Image 1 (spheres, rainbow, N blue to C red):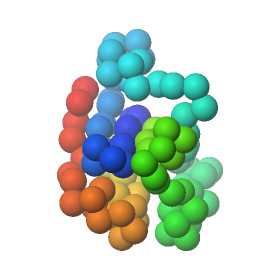
Image 2: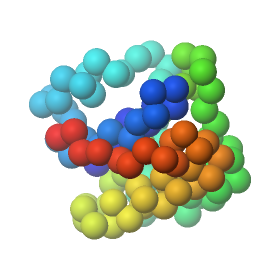
Image 3: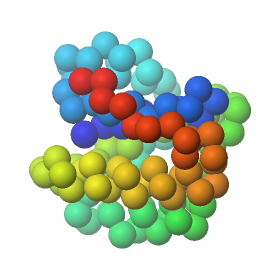
Image 4: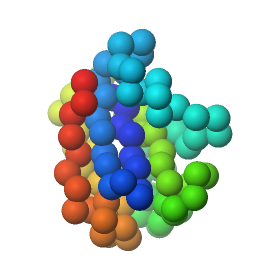
Length: 105
């Protein structure tokens, strides 16, 4: 699952079929964009980084969005991890905390 997180526009957009099927994924890719991979090996480290507020958002091009690559081969677990990330981000960025993740594809 890929999840596009946008700060100024307050969005969590879930993509289950990102490549090459989804045009939105291709449109939102830009050079130097942040990609955070969360899988079995990196989950505890990345969740701790979100809890420690190491991943920040701002209103400039370098920090206004990111892609989360959540890969567990289990849709329920992936959604559980996304919900945890959403709560952690929402504690610091109320605007993102108020928006519910939506499924795009």
